Amino acid sequence: MATDLSGTGDPALDLLPETGTGVLRLDLVRRLAAEALGSAFLIVAVVGSGIMATRLSPDDVGLQLLANAGATVGALIGLILMFGAVSGAHLNPAVTLVDRLLGSISTRDAGLYVVAQTVGACAGSLVANAMFERPVFELATTTRSSGALWLSEVVATVGLLLVIHGCVRTGRARAVPFAVGVWIGGAYWFTSSTSFANPAVTVARTLSDSFAGIAPASAPMFVLMQLLGTGLAFGLIRLFYPHPIADPTA
Image (cartoon, rainbow, N blue to C red):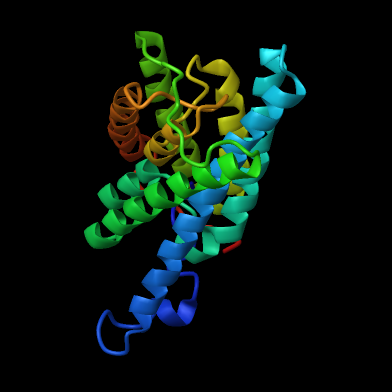
């Protein structure tokens, strides 16, 4: 979910031209694989912890949400630390879109990132289902549709993107993994939607009829609100952080 912290992650590759050796093509494959696998792990954590929570605490929804939020926080921090230097650990089309609007990723790479994130996230739902002996492929039946939920997705997405760029563009990129994890963990509780804030995650959660699921008919409005939040966040980032500051510890 973080913006790109170190280019390709390899200083030698960062200096190579776009043409010639094919090294950058290999690097793009590496980055896309990191986005796909990272998104898959993220959904495994979200869906898997939701299933585990309902099995261990079947009569306490609050405890279920607490367990789900805690697992997601831990996974996010670990995944951003794991893949930040490889692909930037976007793990979220909203993060990638803002980076494209800011000019730090090409249109081609941004499109491929979104595909990798979505495919990886969907695969993660199937893996989570299988790990808990549920049908591998199933569609969620939980309807999530109301103005309050849609507003929550705008708020959660704007906050997430401001947290990321508030760190990166003020020279505190190393704080991103922890800042993102803490924001999402808090937003699980202070938004009525439990803070999806990620179009790829939203699509993937339609593939598990479990605690974290969202009915396919409900997903389009969630994605639309997340994209609206992305647009608002981009404007606020340009307002609050017009001149990025280099991280002195990088």
